[in-house]
Length: 493
Image 1 (cartoon, rainbow, N blue to C red):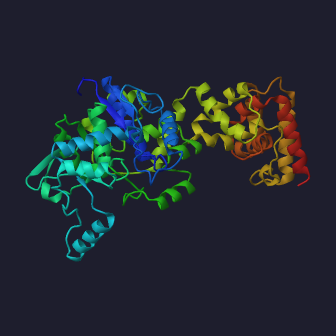
Image 2 (image 1 turned 45 degrees about the vertical axis):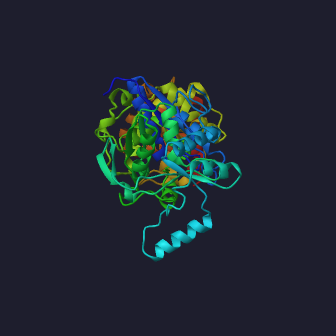
Image 3 (image 1 turned 30 degrees about the vertical axis):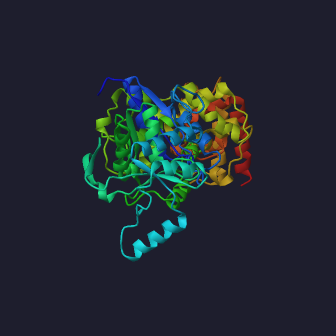
């Protein structure tokens, strides 16, 4: 690991929901920056105004904060290299695009969309690879500036060398050589004055002194062009890392919108904001996505601090990773169990409040140790513990009838249990459990039969946290009240 502090960035486009791929593209550069004592930057690449989605930037920012991926510089926190939204840097790109023209590495192009479309159609008709035909390549730069200044629509294209080749390096895949003849004269500055990604990202990475560019593998084919642009300016090249792709759970193909819709039916999602509402915690989500592309044991339980301490960029792998939601559930449940009682209580409380329940904080702190081991997601707390905060419960009469017993026999068991509980000084596990277990033996029944009747009577449901600990929290008065009510229900069944 290079001890020199690095500068990394997460540079999303606000063109849609923040998904898990974006989260991982933010996590790795964050870990590298923290590991080396460097700087992590958020830059919003919003130059594609046609695909711009209102609210997407805020969703990205909220998602990063929820995950704990905190940036040192960004649009909402500022920094020495701002602005951090590309639409606010228009003049900078304009200057650098024309600078490339002056250096002889770019040229102004005045070809109309109609002409370009006809050229493309002709090339396809002749079974040629569609590309720019070079009509404006040799235009005099001064004439180009004059025509542009007069208001004529213009784009700036990179002047790709016709001969030779370029060798680029991706840290995960090693060097690769591309013939320049296979590359096009790509547009750098559009006719609306906004740059394409190819120019904007390279200029910003240079001006923001980015040392490591960690981005999605969809940009790997553009690496030769990006390296050409960087070298045309004579800049120092950052180290490039193109991350592995996420595959659908079957391992066959990338996740599509249809698969994402199917996942939500099963209580899963690929979108960060939905994962939060589904009851996942950031610790579990981060652990899961970190190991999809990081060459450490897939079973490693890691906190964010663990990840920072262990992260090594050279341990990343280019192999595609299938989205195994069962592993997400495993990591989420594991991290829930690692939370302090007061922390977990604070996290599950909103789920009860959302159901309109009045939550007693002291009671909730007693409940957490009883349900912690059963939680996979935070919203699992509702079926296990919502009944604690209800004044009354309404058990189904059929549920009160124990297996292999009649309603009358079950009522008799409930009456005997009631008499024992009423005579106790308090209902705690130590005091209540021994006499009730003795009752089980005397009646010649199973614990499931006797305690099952009590469980449904007290909680209103067939599944609950440990019975005796639950009765202690509910309190003697309310327990007796509910058992008496259950006896009446059984007598009338």
